[in-house]
Length: 167
Image 1 (cartoon, rainbow, N blue to C red):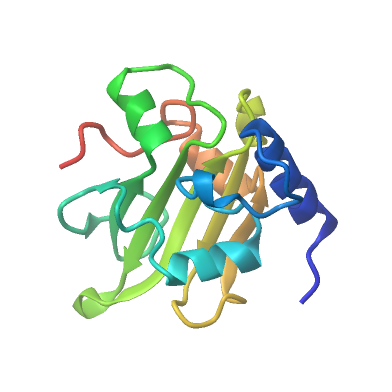
Image 2: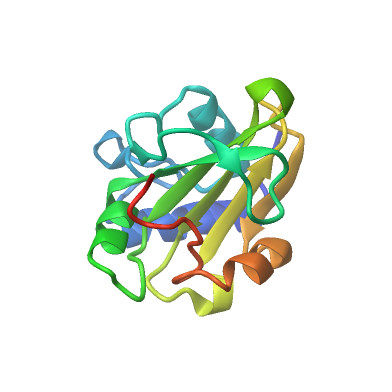
């Protein structure tokens, strides 16, 4: 599967914002920020690379458009920003929502990654949602400024809706 030009640009912007030198993959030292391209991100999620981040204790009903239950995981830059009460989150801030279906089974993920310092009305965020834990092609969103994601998340603090402190 070829990468879309926009995915290469997004990955390069994120790498540049975080001081990386590679053309799209985050170096091991910055593993706290997920890759902002659908193929690499899906594999990163399947590997559970976010599981040691701060997270909610249990899944709960989704307040928005995500189906079923959700449990939020916050990377260290996003958690620090929320803890400090910042109005804007730094580039590299990221959240992973685990999506749960009936019976409590994990059935996908939703991810927001801030790719630049300025949120630019949601265009400065890479949005990703996949409704499968086996097939990375079942995406509902995989782009910067995804309209449905931006519309809902605009209500949050710098596009983050997860309440803090985490429960």
